[in-house]
Length: 250
Length: 102
Image (cartoon, rainbow over all chains, first blue to last red; front, side, top):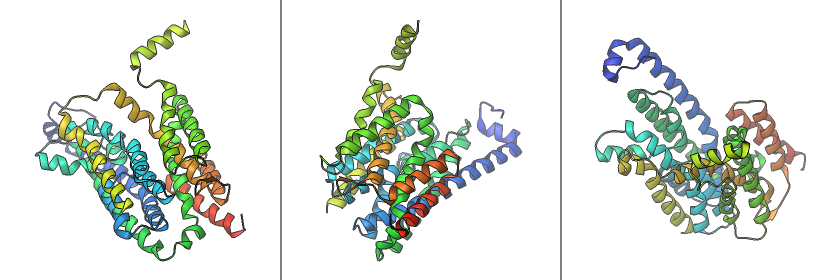
């Protein structure tokens, strides 16, 4: 689409196109919002299975609100892992919010309290829909549509899962709810596995964690899997690595 | 107690990650190594979670009905099934395997 120097001018000139863009973003946001519903139920159920209260399940979904790292932390706690291991596993997964914040910061303008509040929605889905367009107003719209939508549905379904399975933990096994977590994580990394580098570190991480399980306290295998990234030498700047590999090729 | 401590610590630091860009950075960029780690860490961690949640139980290796669910999920993903269907199929396959006594 055409972008003028000022998006208000742009919208004034092409109201129909802008409205169509908004509708398209809204549809995209709705689809990611719908996709989190089963995981919300599963998260609530897993919290119940781990012996946590409904308030604790809701605490994770409102205060932490990250999806993946909530699951990681609760998985570690459910296996009897220490709080430090649970928090570390969760933080390694939520580190990417830092990168999303940098990407979204330019379009989240406003008073400090407003930016502080808006930051809580800095999750995969909001950052993804918030970067579909290049237009600042549409980016902001996508961020809030996906972020708020996921926040509401995620918390609602966490509550449903925690309450529905709270009194009937055996139903979790009977309906195979415990299998939804690994399936969901596999779904999340699936697109990354198309890339050779990501495939290598994912495979190595899986092997490290699996081998360590019987020998170290719960949670440590997950945290230790992070060491797999060292095989691609992340501390070296990208340009140096590409020069080096170009040198190897010649 | 452990749960609340873990919950609140995780919430606090995660919020720092989320809000650093909009509140503190003011247009500056992240050091390249942080950017790169954020891009690389999810793959090994999520893969580790998949393996630990499927093939272990209470600190021991264990092969049971969950492996059936994971295999079905992998096939569904390979066949490009929608995300929600992948999860539902995995649960159904695991439930079915348990029903027949796997």
